[in-house]
Image 1 (cartoon, rainbow, N blue to C red):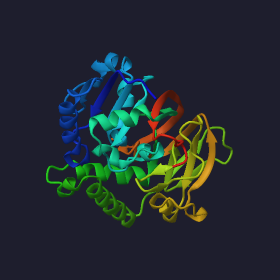
Image 2 (cartoon, rainbow, N blue to C red):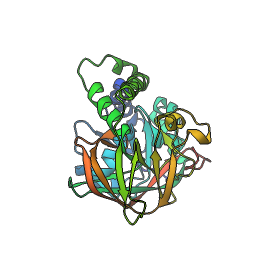
Image 3 (cartoon, one colour):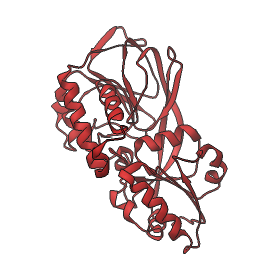
Image 4 (cartoon, helix red, strand yellow):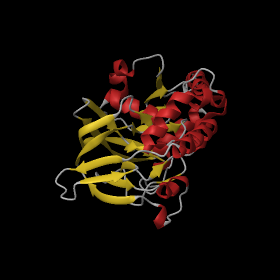
Length: 317
C-alpha cells in the first residue's frame, strides 16, 4: 500500500472528445471531501514546467490524456522520480495498455482513483533520447519512433483532427480511430515512398523500407502489437524494418502471427543511423512538423516510475 498524502493531477482537457474537461471539473469538486492533498493542472492553459516542484514533492503524479500528452509532459519535465499513473483518454493509449491500465479508470471517482493508486505496483520505464543533428531536433520518447509511412499517416491524421469542423471528435477515441483508419487507407493508395537508411558500422550499406520503427513497447496503434521482444523496462530498443504493407497486420491484433510482424533488425541500448532521403516521422503518436534526414542518434533517457494495475507486470501487454 502506498501512503498518498499528496497527489498531483495533470489533465489534457481536449482529450477524449471533451472527457478530459469533465474529469478535471469532477476531480476538483470531489477533492474537497478527501483528506489527501491535491494539486491540479489544466495542461492546455497552464505551464506544467512552473509546477515542477509540486510534482517532485507529491507521492503520485496522475497524467490524464493520450500517448502524446504523456510524451509532452515527459519532455517538459525531463527527469522526475514521482511515480506516474496514466489515465488513458487518447486515441491509441498504447503506454497505458502496456502497463495494464484499464480504460474504465477514467470513470472512477477521485476516491476510487486514490484507492487504485494505493494498491498499484510500480515498474520502471526506460525513456529514449532522439537527436537529428541535421535538423537540430532533440526529443525524449516513451513508446516508439518511426519514419516513413507511419509518419505520413500520423501527420495527416493530426491535420484532420485539428480542423475546427472535425465532426468525429464528439465520439472520442473511437471517432479518432475511424479517422486514423481512413487516413491510413488513403496513404496506401498514394503508394508510400521508401525510407533509405544506413546504420552506423553496418557493412551492408543502405537499406530501403516502407517504414523504420524503433519500438520500446509492444503495444501499438491502440489495438495490436509491433513485435514480441520490446519491453519498457529492459533498457533496450528494438529496430523494426517494415518492408511490406502486410507487416502492419500485427498492429491491428494481439495475436502472435509470425508472418504479420515486421523484421526485427536488432535490440540495442544505442542506435546511430543516417536517413539518406527526406522522410516524415512521428514520435509517440505525434508528427514531426518537418521532414527528417541526415545523421540521427538514439541514446537512453531518464528512467521513470509508472504505476500499473495491481498484481500485473508491464512489458507483456
